[in-house]
Image (tube, rainbow, N blue to C red; front, side):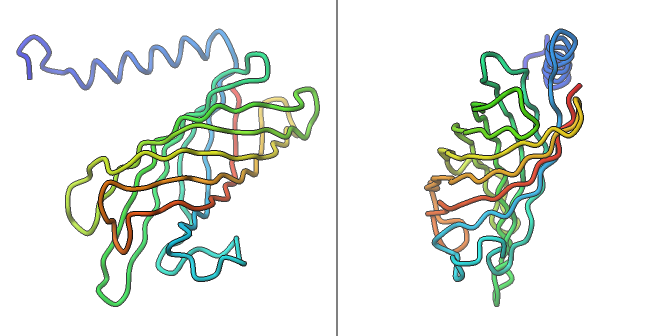
Length: 189
């Protein structure tokens, strides 16, 4: 590390939070939590049951930030974690998805707002106790509906297909493409 920047990580975090707070002060940024079921098709033994997670995995949780809308478009940044325990070896595979999606609202002035999403994600993988490293990029395509019962609170249900080929085998496969069903709670600042 350069001697002039002993706290480089702290400076970057401060600048990011400053940028985020500046944009929040001038417009309506949304912060949210999400719960999802992701089913990589190559690991899915029950494709006819979209709400049942694949064996060894469960619900994935994450956080999201949504930019203010500009002419029906907004930017969604999210980070979420998926984990699978593989029997009988008890191998644990952990993936972190850091995604950036464009959200295109189709109807803006209603309580029920359909939308389309498209974007990409950097995927970090960690099989067993090995270090976390970038293993792939995914292309995300989806559609959803957002319900705004109150001006600052939104609930969303979203279906996305993640096209993801990993750089190496993570667990049983390197092809982790598959559908993701997500429920989101969004609070607008």
